Length: 407
Ligand code: PMT
Image (cartoon, rainbow, N blue to C red; front, side, top):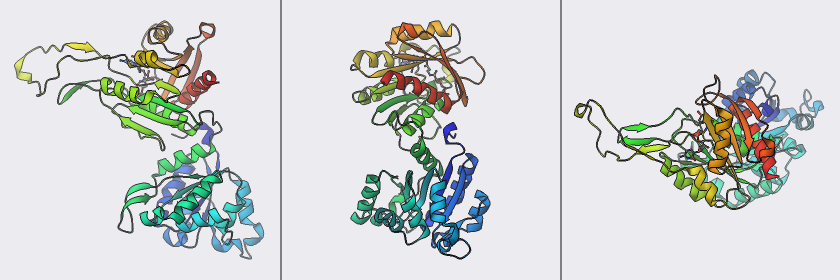
């Protein structure tokens, strides 16, 4: 899902000569699908690893190559200046050790080098190389220099490398590159320096080794909150029940299964959190007795499972939190939505509740969209504030309200 504010952005993609250059065709496609305009600069080596025609076809524009800097045909257009004036953000993926060095030392001897030097907005670097090259103090020094200039240098992934090594140095996934790019151009940075603890997804309360009691939460709402908070600069910890959603780049996920595990993880992370948002659909009950063996169908016509109440994690957080920590809960309701949501503010000690009528079409569990109303503990602001749209838009609206409480 692309955030609304990231649509129609102008992206200048610099592709340097690492083997991962072949993956950039997918990246260009994803950027175009996100309604972005993409201009591409290929280094000489990159042009041997990925065909300029492939990239030109996908971006629907000519691809800029090193010769263009000084050629009679293109040089008069001063591409390094026109391109750098045009773009909202520059993305260098993959970024070789050499291009990292050129950027850190202001080397303008190539089209890509000169463009990086002329560029005045954020540059996001995605280094991808052999792990020894990455760990070399020279490379590390260049990374530090670029970060010192205010640019974003994204840690590569670990795994098998093309050179035969196993380790750090892989180009992150296309989705992760998009996440980091959006984070660099997000118009709001109001969560910078804040730790946001978010819960998402369902819990699974096992009754025997092969069966559990759960609910239809997909995790989409909580994951969208995590992505949006991260774009806005937060340090995000996502305590997540079982979910098939992708963890947004830069978000630290703590996977849990049961409500009790979720409780432990939340309490472990609580101390230095500035904001806690409880979007998870926590199972209210668990089996009183877990059967260590699979319960046999033949044994009884009717199966009665005795359930006991799970801890109320939100209430426990409220009781333990220090002054200044903001606690936001959700209320998934099917009737008397406002009354029940307001009651939850009281009973759980919340600063703000996001009321979610889960019986509505296009809202609640597993849907890509949502429609919520926000209420605050401050009785003066009982006026409901409806927010609707895809779950990223709803997350953005919720965080706007949270930011109001932080001010
Ligand atoms: O995950 P999706 O498919 O995207 O669906 C999103 C959602 C519908 C799950 C989400 O928008 C939502 O409404 N989440 C809250 C679901 C819920 O359990 O609501 P509740 O009214 O039962 O609980 C109220 C609040 O207390 C919630 O913040 C919940 O996280 C918290 N809680 C509940 C029980 C419990 N034992 N401990 C808790 O902390």
